[in-house]
Image 1: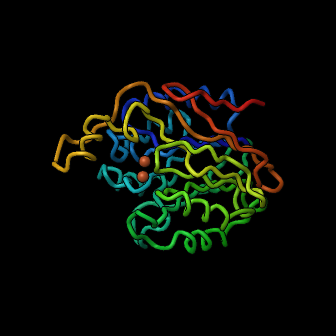
Image 2 (image 1 turned 135 degrees about the vertical axis):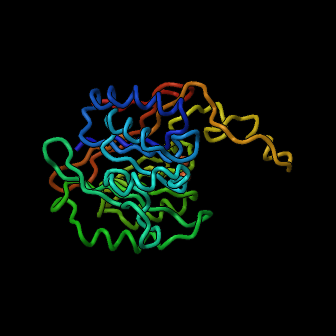
Length: 271
Ligand SMILES: [Fe+2]
Ligand SMILES: [Fe+2]
């Protein structure tokens, strides 16, 4: 299965870049399953139902959120009716929406996609490791599902690496989100799980993690309340990862970074 994962869409520039790049990437890379993180799509904070619908229409099979899941309150009733929009599975029991979904990819192949959130330098949630183990006890890679893709939304690379090794051999890919910087550590782990500790954001990189640099910079060196943070509005780089899996085992054959447009050097998988 050929899988595209796109990292945190930030603001209008990120939304527009993904809406125009996603259909092209689906075609050029012959994508069977596309997963898009959109927790910052709405002016940097949350995702509105209209924006979610536009991303689905542009070719996202599954949309994931993160710590900004609830910044746009209108998403709460919408997520309850939209199984392909995911919040982290380790929110407390009773939280609206779901943390995992089984979708049909090209050719009728079934894929499990889920999101878990880290706890280091993040809000305390249920244990992502135990919650994930419980989810995976209900699915079998290469059996009930042909692929399993995990979005691990976390601040610390250490927790992301630990999470990936914890799952190595049990899932097709663990892709990190949340830091908004693409990491150069994409690899297939020894057990066959593809891993990249952060996909990077889809936003303007002439910024502080996607936000306009003046207000964001002032916050650090002057300890006074300042301007509200707003997304930077220059051309976005669409960032993510391409993963190819073996249908029989569900394990990864390869992973390669994807970067298109904007300020970052382009990266495009071949073959
Ligand atoms: Fe984010
Ligand atoms: Fe986040």
